Length: 255
Image (cartoon, rainbow, N blue to C red):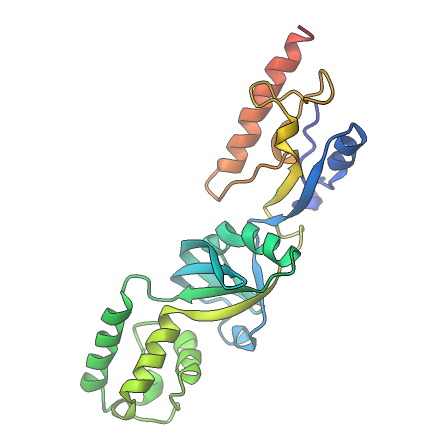
């Protein structure tokens, strides 16, 4: 039985040595990369709202092409983005960055509203709150730390009165709220990753028995194989299910 785990969370003992064992027996190993992990981003404004959590939709782009998207509680860190929706798409970021592609993420910070609906909402807000300072324009809509950056990115001076915000600036602000773009520079290392993407090529394993197609009576199970899922217990279920299947067939002995 070969069920040595991956390289994720090496503090638990999963140091990747199982991959070397598999390779020594003739198996191919698809390069393991961190998955279900945080993303590091280039922009400097993250330090201003580190620790902020907000409902958001996150879409990942590889060389300008959308490759993954998820929605949930987004968490900002001083170096980038975290939270469940980020974890869900992180495997695609790891692969794209490994391949030398440009990786960006687009953050929709008000996914409950369509773009035109948000623009109309902000337009009405200008009329109703025209007497208030511009820096208070988004009070009660988004976290204060967030809207300070969004206003600045939209070219709206902090000292301006709300009634002085132009329609053009409202359009830019709407675009920023519905699609704040950030450049992903790296995924966090294996130490922070919950799992890996990559591992022993599943084409070399019988899916009905988990027995190696290359070495008789060698059974593989769990995360050492190139199988990874999203958050929600799927990776644990794979470990249990593949382990039971491999154990039962290994216990039968040669047929």
